[in-house]
Image 1 (cartoon, rainbow, N blue to C red):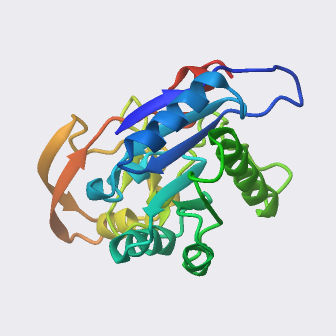
Image 2: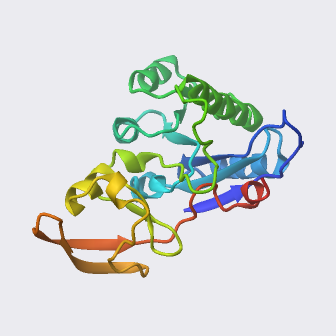
Length: 245
């Protein structure tokens, strides 16, 4: 997975926020267009990460993703199936399809649950970036969030996306090995609720790599599991445009 980011642009209370969009596409042209857009800042401060469909959903589990853009090209079966699979996981971010300027294809993408279907062949990179920004704004405005709810980028509150609904057990730790979040699958295998886990030491190997571990649940049941540990940056993404906010 690769990443590129844009300049900060205008400052002030009305300045557009820095957004991180993960793009699933193997198209060199599309990646180059988004990379150039990030560098130009034409659509505000944007950060892009890239992966290919063959890499599956694993790159999409990174905390801090504001939008997902899935390249469905001409609308092949495999591309649309991947789009549906991602949407079915219920990400806490808008999913935007990128495909040909075909009304039937765009209708199929919307029926699959995409927030929008944009065409890189018709839309300029700047208009694509602005459309992504609007989709994120619509999602944020539509969410019924209490007035005192923490904003997405507040330290200590990791902005999780697909990790909530993926069937794989996922636990997010801070740099001290303390649990910050555990999805439903992890709560099930550990035998504890998220409230019981958050703020407690993980108690299992936290070095990067793969480990075979034995999990002792509160009910005394022991479970064998294969654990894979990876390092990520929590909260805001780690690219320069977000670090400076």
